[in-house]
Length: 298
Ligand code: PXG
Image (cartoon, rainbow, N blue to C red; front, side, top):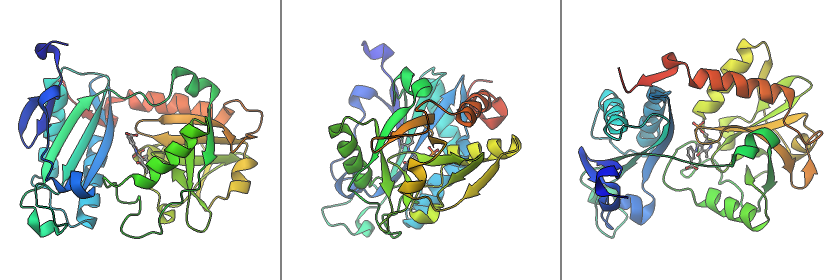
């Protein structure tokens, strides 16, 4: 790829070519996973739920006492500008704020200024067949941490237990992993929230299991309520998943993906369920509704 065609990455107010965009090895995001991030989709030139993602990164940063050196409005503008600069329409934005450059001690007071990085690129999570046929899943031996500093309620740069769970799924030839809380309740996927349908009722685990409050899952819950379904936030067990009528994951990257197998037990008849398919169709419409996001091109 010629330099002219290369993507440009935003780092602290300046743009760098993708091949030249770098952070310091003394950045505490790199040294200690000390930072926060968001993954956001752009549909037809509209950044879906951008304000919600920006609010969430500020909430994560607040929990870590990391002061983002710009206002939320400035961050919205910076994301819009980065997508525009790269002339992208359907794409994926990774927003990262690190504690910044410090020295080799973990004390955050060593870092004088947090870094803001915005990458506008593409992401492919599951192949095209996943959406129609559904994916296979398994619970790995790696449990979510107790709800403490490394809880996934904070969207921090520390994703080690999700990565370990994903490795387990990869090694087992299964598409995706499901993560359990320390006491064995279902929390979420490695980068997705999980939903169950049973007798027409839609359930998802509470964020107090240490799951992230998903922007997609909130949107899907609202859609489901509008369609007249009963939606409940409740603890789910593996037994409940094995015997579900329908299961699906939600996430900015994953969108809505049906689950057809959990730890080698087929879910219902193994095909994407009716309510799942209905929600997928409605969610697709929502993502193409310009009022649901921030327009890049006016
Ligand atoms: N749980 C966790 C732990 C996540 O990281 C979700 C749930 C879904 O949340 P949203 O708000 O996206 O509906 C996430 C989101 C990636 C990637 O690179 C991961 C996420 C989002 C985008 C990209 O794999 N995780």
